[in-house]
Length: 121
Image (tube, rainbow, N blue to C red):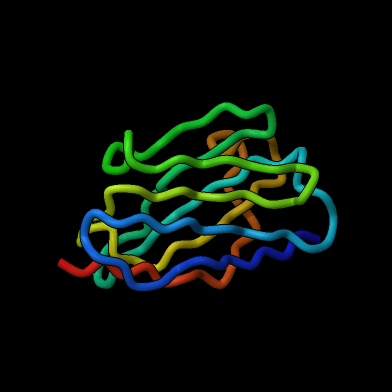
Protein backbone atom coordinates (compact mmCIF):
# COMPACT_ATOMS: atom_id res chain seq x y z
CA UNK A 1 0.00 0.00 0.00
CA UNK A 2 1.20 3.52 -0.82
CA UNK A 3 0.12 6.44 1.33
CA UNK A 4 0.96 9.92 0.13
CA UNK A 5 1.08 13.20 2.02
CA UNK A 6 1.78 16.59 0.46
CA UNK A 7 3.38 19.57 2.15
CA UNK A 8 4.67 23.01 1.21
CA UNK A 9 1.55 24.75 0.02
CA UNK A 10 0.63 28.25 1.10
CA UNK A 11 0.07 31.82 0.04
CA UNK A 12 2.55 33.57 -2.24
CA UNK A 13 2.56 36.72 -4.36
CA UNK A 14 2.63 36.73 -8.14
CA UNK A 15 6.11 35.96 -9.35
CA UNK A 16 7.05 34.11 -6.20
CA UNK A 17 8.09 30.51 -5.67
CA UNK A 18 6.96 27.52 -3.67
CA UNK A 19 8.25 24.00 -3.32
CA UNK A 20 5.81 21.18 -2.78
CA UNK A 21 6.90 17.86 -1.39
CA UNK A 22 5.17 14.52 -1.35
CA UNK A 23 6.23 11.83 1.05
CA UNK A 24 5.24 8.22 0.67
CA UNK A 25 4.83 5.88 3.59
CA UNK A 26 4.53 2.18 3.21
CA UNK A 27 6.38 0.48 0.43
CA UNK A 28 8.94 2.11 -1.83
CA UNK A 29 7.77 4.19 -4.77
CA UNK A 30 10.90 3.69 -6.84
CA UNK A 31 9.03 1.57 -9.39
CA UNK A 32 6.00 3.88 -9.50
CA UNK A 33 5.31 6.73 -11.82
CA UNK A 34 4.61 9.83 -9.78
CA UNK A 35 2.66 12.92 -10.69
CA UNK A 36 1.34 16.24 -9.51
CA UNK A 37 -2.19 17.28 -10.41
CA UNK A 38 -4.12 20.36 -9.49
CA UNK A 39 -7.72 21.38 -9.31
CA UNK A 40 -8.91 24.94 -9.14
CA UNK A 41 -12.36 25.82 -7.83
CA UNK A 42 -14.97 25.11 -10.46
CA UNK A 43 -12.48 23.53 -12.87
CA UNK A 44 -11.49 20.03 -13.81
CA UNK A 45 -8.43 18.41 -12.37
CA UNK A 46 -5.41 18.79 -14.63
CA UNK A 47 -2.02 17.17 -14.87
CA UNK A 48 0.77 19.48 -13.77
CA UNK A 49 3.77 17.19 -14.17
CA UNK A 50 4.69 13.56 -14.08
CA UNK A 51 7.92 11.62 -13.71
CA UNK A 52 8.17 7.99 -14.68
CA UNK A 53 9.99 5.33 -12.72
CA UNK A 54 13.01 5.82 -14.98
CA UNK A 55 12.93 9.60 -14.82
CA UNK A 56 11.07 10.58 -17.97
CA UNK A 57 9.24 13.85 -17.37
CA UNK A 58 6.17 15.43 -18.91
CA UNK A 59 4.79 18.85 -18.00
CA UNK A 60 1.43 20.40 -18.58
CA UNK A 61 1.56 23.17 -21.15
CA UNK A 62 0.62 25.87 -18.66
CA UNK A 63 3.60 25.19 -16.37
CA UNK A 64 6.39 24.41 -18.84
CA UNK A 65 9.49 26.41 -18.11
CA UNK A 66 8.26 27.43 -14.65
CA UNK A 67 7.78 24.20 -12.70
CA UNK A 68 10.24 21.37 -12.11
CA UNK A 69 9.37 17.90 -10.88
CA UNK A 70 11.94 15.66 -9.26
CA UNK A 71 12.06 12.49 -7.24
CA UNK A 72 14.32 11.02 -4.59
CA UNK A 73 13.75 7.30 -4.47
CA UNK A 74 16.07 6.86 -1.50
CA UNK A 75 13.87 9.18 0.53
CA UNK A 76 10.61 8.02 -1.05
CA UNK A 77 9.72 11.57 -2.02
CA UNK A 78 8.73 13.58 -5.06
CA UNK A 79 8.90 17.35 -5.25
CA UNK A 80 7.53 20.15 -7.37
CA UNK A 81 9.49 23.39 -7.56
CA UNK A 82 7.18 26.16 -8.72
CA UNK A 83 8.67 29.44 -9.91
CA UNK A 84 7.20 32.56 -11.48
CA UNK A 85 3.84 31.75 -9.97
CA UNK A 86 0.72 33.33 -11.41
CA UNK A 87 -2.77 33.79 -9.94
CA UNK A 88 -4.02 31.13 -12.34
CA UNK A 89 -1.79 28.60 -10.57
CA UNK A 90 -4.07 28.88 -7.55
CA UNK A 91 -5.47 25.42 -6.86
CA UNK A 92 -5.34 22.40 -4.62
CA UNK A 93 -2.30 20.39 -5.64
CA UNK A 94 -2.39 16.61 -5.36
CA UNK A 95 0.41 14.09 -5.38
CA UNK A 96 -0.40 10.83 -7.12
CA UNK A 97 1.26 7.50 -7.75
CA UNK A 98 0.64 4.82 -10.31
CA UNK A 99 1.16 1.11 -9.75
CA UNK A 100 2.98 1.17 -13.06
CA UNK A 101 6.10 2.91 -14.37
CA UNK A 102 4.17 5.47 -16.43
CA UNK A 103 0.87 7.23 -15.69
CA UNK A 104 -0.12 7.16 -19.36
CA UNK A 105 -0.10 3.35 -19.23
CA UNK A 106 -1.61 2.85 -15.80
CA UNK A 107 -3.46 5.82 -14.34
CA UNK A 108 -2.67 6.79 -10.75
CA UNK A 109 -4.37 4.77 -8.07
CA UNK A 110 -2.93 6.45 -5.00
CA UNK A 111 -3.62 10.05 -4.06
CA UNK A 112 -2.61 12.40 -1.32
CA UNK A 113 -5.17 14.61 0.44
CA UNK A 114 -3.91 17.72 -1.37
CA UNK A 115 -2.31 21.00 -0.39
CA UNK A 116 -3.65 24.48 -1.16
CA UNK A 117 -1.57 26.88 -3.22
CA UNK A 118 -2.83 30.44 -3.46
CA UNK A 119 -1.14 33.05 -5.61
CA UNK A 120 -2.19 36.62 -4.92
CA UNK A 121 -2.11 39.31 -7.59
